[in-house]
Amino acid sequence: MSQQPVLLPYADPAFVADPFPLYRQLREDGPVRRAVIAGGLDAWLVTRYEDGLAALSDPRLSSDVQDASDPRLIKQLPRFERESMMSNMLRSDPPDHTRLRRLVSKAFTARRVAGLRPRIQEITDRLLDAVVPAGRAELVADFALPLPVTVISELLGVPADDRHDFQRWTDAMLVRGERLPDPVVVDEAWQQMRGYLTKHLASKRDRPGDDLLSALINAHDEERRLSHDELIAMSFLLLVAGYVTTVNLIAGGIAALLANPDQLTLLRERPELLPDAIEEFLRYDGPVSPGIARFAREDVEIAGVTIPRGATVLVASAIADRDPARFPDPDRLDITRRDNGHLAFGHGIHYCLGAPLARLEGQIAVGTVLRRLPDLALAVPPAELSWRPGGLRGPARLPVTFASP
Ligand code: HEM
Image (cartoon, rainbow, N blue to C red; front, side, top):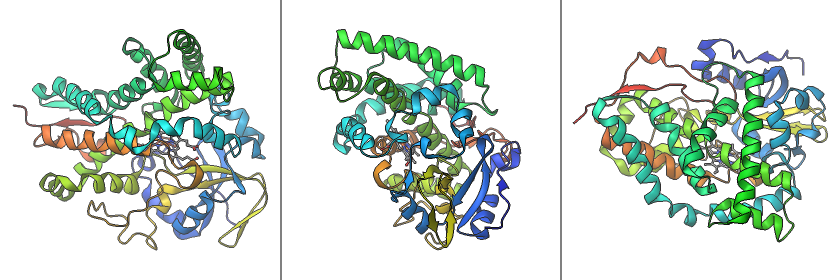
């Protein structure tokens, strides 16, 4: 292909605030577009829905970074990603992936997750109780961040007293505020997190509970189905995968409603549309943006373009989810949209394990905010909202006002 790679300009605040004009141009340029993505890496972006769907279930495209030919990929990864992410299910292929996923999938059945509803509602209400009297809040720090971190820590069995440390380390590694991360700070946070997880796993081994970590320790100790490194990597993956993305779903969803007042009014009038609204937030501006990485195990042809062995393929779910060939009027937020098969949770064997939990948290969080915060409005002009740069997208801060009782 003759095209020069396009640089995704993460240093440009206008792109970070609204990447969709460039995303659209990339899709219109062709079904496969070379681009330099975060970290300076050259990737082949798959921009159309049908091709993206097929690519995510193509066994020639690996999730294991060791199948990449660009040695910078492994070298450039922060130490925590090298140590934590390499032996987890997200970054592995069958048969390891099959074994690892089977171990935790029982904990994430729709039924088990539905049982968490009362507790998620309680945490949501407690967080909102603290801000309601003031009539104003910063909905990321006050609400969208602490809600999922509390839920996932409880599921994993992390003691309540340790959650602030947990949140601090994770934020340093992944949440990132408005600037790109400082590698020294990231490595320090990972060292502390790793030390904590090792200690915490040892104490759980002595006193197992009815939580997910205890079940995983059992799989490691009794059944020899999980190595020590895999145990640490799995705990870490569940913690971060279940946290940062959900923050962005909640805060991004509320931001999308505030930017589309007709949809906000409609959702207040018809709260039964809430599940559809959550799917639409995921399609319209999903947390994983522009998309999901794979590595070509062999030369692979997609839409007539040959992608060479070892290349990084980015299935650009956020671009494909606005493909007009799949979604009518794709740039419009429409909470009544039917047949919303978005790619925000991926597709195929790696389809998001936590999707039922993320959906439930999103529905309770957004539904309760609308019910309890009347006259909700942005406290700053929409153009002044700040967004996080990089592959996990969402508002960095969401200052709002509302009527207090
Ligand atoms: C996988 C998105 C919430 C756990 C994925 C993938 C995506 C994704 C796109 C596929 C990655 C790939 O194919 O390489 C999201 C979004 C979320 C969310 C947008 C929130 C809105 C959660 C939650 C949890 C979770 C709450 C768990 C507690 C996982 C795990 C995987 C995964 C363990 C790896 C599955 C595998 O490799 O088989 N997620 N996720 N996610 N997600 Fe989520």
